[in-house]
Length: 113
Length: 114
Image 1: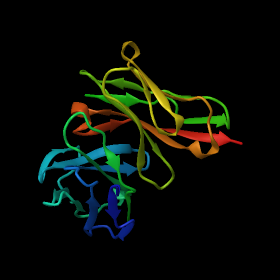
Image 2: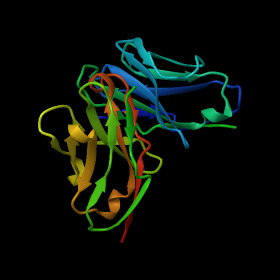
Image 3: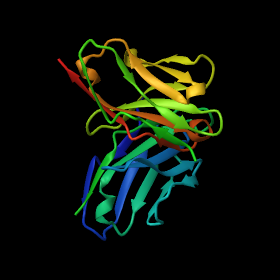
């Protein structure tokens, strides 16, 4: 069974540009989560999508947004990139009903210059 | 608000020695607890989870963890560490049974000496 996949592996952008990160969940999983792992800040919850709807978001500005498609894959968009957005962005998926564990993808390393 | 504390930022052990990584949580309801491991530049791999029942849970790679409600702890243990266990370990508490967000500790980096 394939795990959570993310693309691209690495992404280099300039400050002010937009970044789009993609995630495909494990087959059968309806929930997708996004986390940011920035140096010195640890793992922070960004967004949770379930059945195509945004269910919860962390303490991040509105320029962090995303969506979930009918096939449950997801996109994370970061607009007006800032240097401090440089981080590893991790996507996870779960069955979406409690209790359930989250399975993580390999991440996308975003570098903003 | 829920929180997780991993008191040890960095631990060094010799190969073959036993290991215990500490985790304390703060959560108002029944906690759903997880341990993940992350190798450099990689994603997180689930080692084990606690939802309910037996307070000693077994995971992959020979790891186990014990849930102690009275101490608000969920420490990870391994009787004999292998060089391949060198990585960063994260404890997490799940909101609403893990179906919503996970709140992570800051992590403990494990170094294994030959």
